[in-house]
Image (cartoon, rainbow, N blue to C red):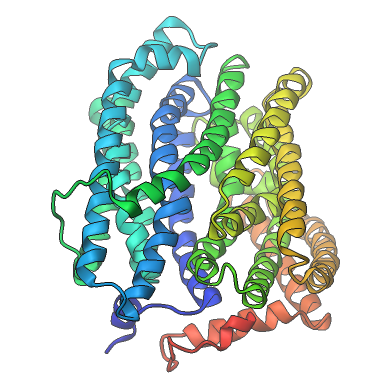
Length: 543
C-alpha cells in the first residue's frame, strides 16, 4: 500500500502526527487564502467594493457557525466517537452509526435550508443592521451579494457532517483537503467570474468553493460504509443529546459571531476601506492560528473526548498539545510583529492597494498579533470543556469577553480608527484566555502547569532572540537592495525571517526544548520514504 493510500484509508492515532497533517494542509489552504487576498487587494484595493463583499459574508457565516459548528464541536464528534468505540467493542452495530449520521445530517440540513431561505427573503433588513454606515446604494448591492452567499451554508453544513464523521474516525487527510478546495472556488470567482458578472462573481465563487468543500469528502465517507438515507427521527436519544449539548455551544458561537457583526458595524462607520483592512489583517494573523492553534485543537479533540475523565491521560494530552501550540505560535507572533510591513507589501501591496492602505493594515495587524498566543490556545481550552460535556462555562466566559471587546472597540476606534478594533479584540482575547485557563484550573487541576510554564519561558527567551536577529538582518540587508521594488521587500523579508527562524530553532536546541525534539521526531516519522507505524502510541507522551 502506498504512502498516500495509507493516509487516506488508515486512522492517525497520534495527536501530534494528526495535527502535523492538518497543519500541513492548513498551510496550503492559508497560502491559497493569501493568493486570494492578494488578487482581491490588487484588483479592488481597500475600497467600498471590498467592504460590501466582506459585509455580505457576515450573516451567512453567522448561520453556518451557529448551526453547523455548534452541533459538531459540542455534540456530534464526542457522541459519534463514543459510538465508534462501542462498535469496536461490539456494543453497537455499524447500522446504528449510519442511521445516526443520516438522522443528524437530515435534521441539520433542514434547519440550514430554512434559515437560508429566511436570510434570502430578509437580506435587505439584515444588511441594514450589519453595515449601518453604508449608503443606501451600497446596502442594496451588499444585500444582492448576501442572497447569493446564503447558498454556501447549505453545502458547508453537509460538508460539516462529513467532516465530523472523518474526524471521529481519525481520517484527517481528506478532512484537511476541504478548505483548500474552498479557497480554490473563491479564487476562481475572483479571477474568472468577476470578469463576466462583476462583484456578484465573487459571491458565486464562495458558493462554488462551499460545494467543493463538501464534494471532496464524499468518497472517503462512502469508503467508510456510510450511505445516505432520508431518515429523520427527532425523538432519537442521541440526536436530542447532541441538541442539548449544542445549545450552549451555539450560544457561545453566537456571542463570537455577534462580536464580529459588531466589529463590521463599527468598521462601516469609519473611512471607506476600513472593513476590508480589518478583514485582511485578520486573515493574515489567522494564518498561524489555522496552521497551529486550530490544527492541534482539531486533532486533539477526539483524543480528549475519549479520555475526558481519565485525569492522568487528560493532563498528559492537554499539556503536550498546549506546549506544542505555544512552541510554534510564539515565533510566529515575533515574526509578524517585526516583519508586518514587509508581509503586507508582499501579500497585498500591488495594483490598487496603496501605501496608505499598507500603513493602516500594518497597524491593525500589529495589534492583532499581540494576542496570537491567546487566540491559538482558546480553541484547545474550549474543547477541554466540551470533551467533559460542559458547554455552558465557555459560553458565559465568552459572553463577558465579547462585552469587553465591544466596549473597548467603541472607545478605541475614536483614537486609533480601524486599528483600535484590532487592539480591542486582542485585549478581549487575552481576557478570555485567562478566564478559561483559571476556570479549568479550578475544575480539573494544574494540568501540568509547571512543565508548561518552564517550556513557555524557553520559548519566550528564544522569541526575544529571534526578534533581535530579525531586526539586525533587516538593517544589514537594507543597503544591498532596492526597497522600492517587490523583489527588494521580498528579499529583506525572506532573509530576516529565515534568519529569525534559524535563531529560534538554535536557541530552543540550546535550551533543550522538549517540544523542538518532539517536532523533529514527528517530522522524521511522517517522511514518505520512512516506514511509519500509524498505530504507534508512543507520541501520546508528546513526541
